[in-house]
Amino acid sequence: MIKDYLYMQITSSLESLACNNDITLVNAEDLSENVPDTALINTRAVIMNKQFDINVDYSYRLAHELSHILYGDHEAQAVYQFSEYGKRGEELLAHRNAIRMLMAIEPPSNPFTFMSYYRVPSWLENDVMRTYNEFKAV
Image (cartoon, rainbow, N blue to C red; front, side, top):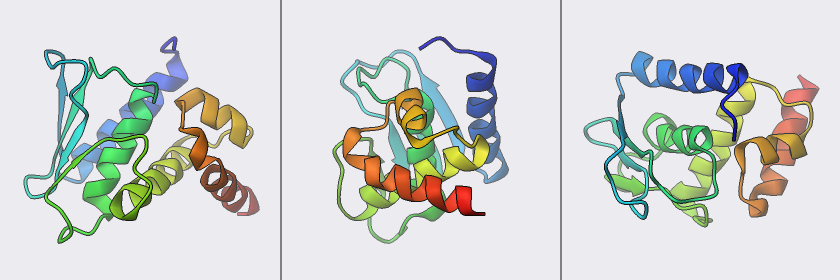
């Protein structure tokens, strides 16, 4: 993906959200490509692996990890690692909150461009549609 001005603004908004909520953000560039992004609940830190070999976009993954700290059940688990296939419990909640966070930052022209732009896993299409329609109704 070409990092255009809008994309940089979206990423910057997520980084500001982390900073404003006392969440430490570490952009690791020396991790193996199979090491997932990680949210550390107790220390309020997110480690983003810049080398992570996954089809899902960085900004979506960042929103997902931030949502574990901002909106998750802090008693459920202390460490979360990104998985595009996490369909239950806290992982599903983080996916849904990532969609909501990104749409609040930059409302998409339609749900399909949103999914394409962030490379959201296709199984989340219904959640993207529902959230898009909620934002559109407001």
